[in-house]
Every structure is written in structure tokens, then in C-alpha cells.
Amino acid sequence: MKGRGRKVSVINIGIALFFLVSVILPILSMFRRITPEGFREMVRLPMFGQAVKNSLATGLTATVLSLLLAFAAAWCVQRVLARHRAVISMVLTVPMLIPSISHAFGLVALFGSNGMLTRLLGLPGNIYGFKGIVAGSILYSFPVAFLMFSDILRYEDGMPHKAAQVLGVPSVRRFLDITLPYMRKTIISAFFTVFTMIITDYGVPLMVGGKTMTLSVLMYNRAVGMIDYDGGSVIGAFLLVPAVAAFVVDLLNPENAQNSYVSETMSAHGSRAQKAAAYIFCAAGCILILAPVAAFCAMVFETKYPVDPSFTLYHIRKTISRGADRYLLNSLMYAVLTAALGTVAAFLCAYMTARAKGRFHGGLHLMAMLSMAIPGLVLGLSYVVFFHGMPIYGTVLVVLLVNSVHFFASPYLMIYNTLGKVNPNLEAVGLSLGVGTPVIIRDVILPKVRFTLMEMFSYSFVNSMMTISAVSFLAPPSPKPVALMINQFEAQLLMESAAFVSVVILAVNLAMKGLLYVLGRRYR
Image 1 (cartoon, rainbow, N blue to C red):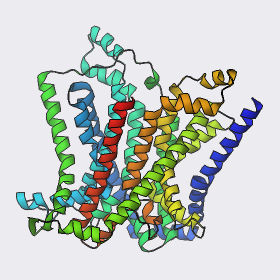
Image 2 (image 1 turned 135 degrees about the vertical axis):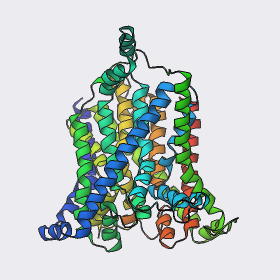
Image 3 (image 1 turned 180 degrees about the horizontal axis):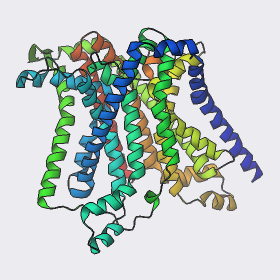
Image 4 (image 1 turned 30 degrees about the vertical axis):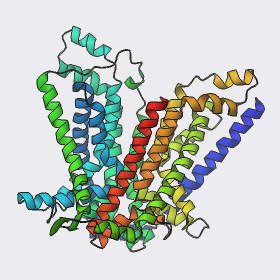
């Protein structure tokens, strides 16, 4: 037992050193670049103050609208509709499979000055600025909020509602007094999660922001465009504030009602009128989500957007001739390696915190969650500052490391929660029978959690395929991921080529999701 305790301590120390090098030291290095003079110089810039106002205005507006729409959609799916739930949920989460800049690109294709609907309906074509950022941010963040609300509504206990119904409590009162308190933590988490996603994203405001400068675009221009890492570090510190606030609020709001055992799940119910309204609302949501995707898909086959809509394959051949096929293979390599390394690392860390529970398991759990509080844009800049001059800088390894850390928290939580539900006495029984822990893990635990492992792999793969934020700082000239070609083509006004790259990323991620679905039905 003493030997096992020493092994656990050694592994815990190794994991702690990994987080120290990959998360804490890079962030501290970025903060070291901030000097009082540089801070004052940055905050006195007129564009900085305006960027803060624009970021708060667009972020709060898009967050509130996104949460309201996501809650309404989740309520329709889980409480009103008994059929077609899987199809509706799948369509509503399609935006999670493409980069944020692709959503904005689709809005431009539809509502820009030469957009398809602009020309067809005679619209003003002024999608740029505040309204464009808000619309693109809603498309980008809606699926995350929808999944959070849909998941928590699925597991609400129906017994309190039945008891209240017997007592004659009206439905509105039951919603306010039972459902909302039950969802309090999820609503708070969803607000901070969505707000952080929006305020730290630069893809949407870069594409449709026009003259509306935001902090994320300002940081991108400073750090990538002007190679001003000191100024970028100041802005990065500001962008960390909402993410860290979300992390602290999440820690200070422990699970209460959501921990209860669900004795009876809530069944879908509603009158014909309510079901018809729910179907209309969900159908409208699906159309609004798919329309920008369909727009940039159609643009790929237009001879010259927007003047000549005749069919052609020229842009596909042109994009491939510029190396899109090689870049796609690079992205597949990054995605597979990131998913494999991230899944293994997340499983090892979760096993040590959920089951082994050595001396430092509480601290390790906190460090594993810490990566969730660091936006990709900030993480990428911190890696530039910390790893610059080191052997791995400018190589595939630093991209794999930043992607693994960037997407670590969600897979970690998936397997952490799953391992907590596996019989906690397996290792003790194995030791009493002379069976080592590695054998128990290989022969008993891994088969039990294999579907969760597949979900972890899929999550890391999909996000690695479409990420731009952190990789834009660190990707070597070769091999370069395909997602960065969207920025490159957009800057060169090659809209059709940028659209084709977005379609390719979407197709690959849909294929991965389809594979997960097939494997899930086979191994569940």
C-alpha cells in the first residue's frame, strides 16, 4: 500500500508539473510583459476605450439574446415535443462544427452589400458593425447554451411537479418555483460561458465588425499584425477577466438541486397549439442556422460572387492548387494527434482525481479546470511569449500542446463524472485478489467508459479541426492547418475559396460526428 501511495504521489507530481509548464508559467510570462508604462499607454489610446465599450455592448446583447433563444429551443425540445428531438438537436448544434468566422462569412453572403438575400429582397445590405457582430455571435454561441439547457432539463425530477399539480399550483408558478431554482447554477454558468466565448472571439467581429472595433480584434491586430506582444498582453489581461470571473463563480456555486436522484423524468407534454408553436419555433431556428451555412456552400459553386452565379468547379480546383489538400492533411494530423494525446492525458488526470485521490487530488482537479478559464486568443499569445526561443517553438509539438491544453477541461469533466459513477471498490477488490490496478483499468474500467472516451476523442478532434484563435499565433509555416486558410483567402478577397475551406471543415466534422453516432449505437 505504501508503494502504491508513492506511485500515486509521483504521478500526481508529474501531472502538476505538466500544468505548471503548459498553463501557469505561460500566463505568468504574459503578465510579466505588462509594464506600468505599457499599461498606461495602451489604456489611454482612444481605440482601446472604444473597444472596451463595443465588446461589452455586443457581448452582453448577444449573450442575453443567445440565452433566451437557447432556453426557448431547449424547452421546446425537452418539454413540448415528443418526436424528432434528435434531428432538431443535431441541426441546432451544426454551428459548433465550423469556425466562428465561417458564421460571419455566411451572414455576409446572405445580408452583405452584395448578399444573396440583399439582392433578392432589396434589403439595405448593412450587416456590418454592431448588428453583424451580435448576429454572428448568437449563431456561434447558441449551440453551447442550447446543449447546457437541454441537458439539465432532460434530467429534472418530475415528482415535485406532479405533487404541485395535485395541489393545484399553476404551471407558471411551478416553473418559477421549481424549475428555475433547479436550473440556477446552469443559467449562471451558461451566462458566463457564452459571454466569455463572445467577448474573446475575433472571427465574427473581424469579418463583420466594420468600424466597430472590439478587444479581441484589437489584440489580434496588435499581437499578430504589429508583433506588439507587450500591448497584446495588456489586452489579454483584460480578456481574462470575464473568463476568470466565470471560473470563480462556478466554484462558488456548488451543485444543489442538480445532485438529487431523479425518481421520475419529465415527459413531454403540451396541447396541439403548443406543439405546433414549438415546431414552428424550432423550424425557424433550424432555417436561421442552416441559411448562412447553405449560403457559403452555394458560393463555392458560383463563377464569380456576386456578379455571376452560374455553376462552376473552378474555385475548388483553384483552392486545391493553392495547397488546400495538403493543409487538410495537416489539420487531420493535428486533430488526430491532439485528440489522442488529449484523451489519454484527460483520462489519466481524471483517474487520479476521481479514483486514486492522492495527496494533491483537489489541487489537480482545480488545475485541470483552470484551462477552461483561459481564452484561446490569450493562451496563444502566452505560448508565444513563454516558448519563444525554445526548441519546440515553431514546430508541430507546440501546436499539439496548445490545442491539448485549450480543449482539456471539457473532456476531463466528461471522464471525471463518468469515473465517479463506476464502482469505487474495483481497485480494492483487485488488490485483495492479487490483480494490479493497471489490469483493473485495462480489463474493467476502460470497457465501461469506452463511449465516454469516444466522445472525448470526438470533441478534441472537432475543435482542433476548426480552431483558429490560439493556432494563429503558433502554427509553423509548414505544416499549416487548413482553418487558417479562411483568414488568408478572406484577406485576399477570395470569398469562394474561403467558403470552400469552411465546407471542407464542416464535412470532416460531420463525418466524425456520424462515426461517433454509429460507434455509440454499437457499443452502448
